[in-house]
Amino acid sequence: MKRSHCLQTCVTGQVDNWKMAYAREREVSISVVVGDRIHDEWLRKTGADSRTPATDPVRQNIFIGVALDALLTYHPEADLRERTIAAYHRRLIRLGLVAPRPEGGEHGE
Image (cartoon, rainbow, N blue to C red; front, side, top):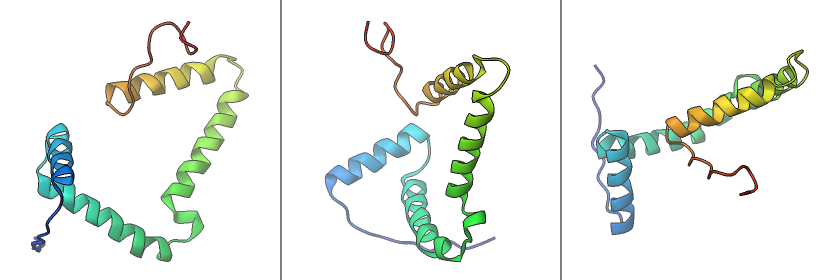
C-alpha cells in the first residue's frame, strides 16, 4: 500500500467555502478534493510532455466526437443525431453537469 504524504496550506475563506461545498456535493473528503486538484495539475505538467498526439486523451476525445458526429449525421435514420444529442443532454442534467433548459423551446417561446 502506498503511503500518502501530508500537505498543508492556507487559503482564503472564499476558497475554503468552495472546497467544502464541492466536497459535500460529491460526498468526498476535502482532502480528496484538494489532492485530486493537485494530482490533475501534476499530470498536466508532467504527462503532457511525455504523450504523443495519438495517446493524448483530449485529442482522442475530440477525434471520437467528430467521428461520431459524422456517423450520426449521415446515418440512414435522419433523426438519430438529434435523438442522441437529446439523450446526452438528459444524462448531463441527471448527473448535475448542466442546468435543465427552461420550458418553451430553445428560444424561450
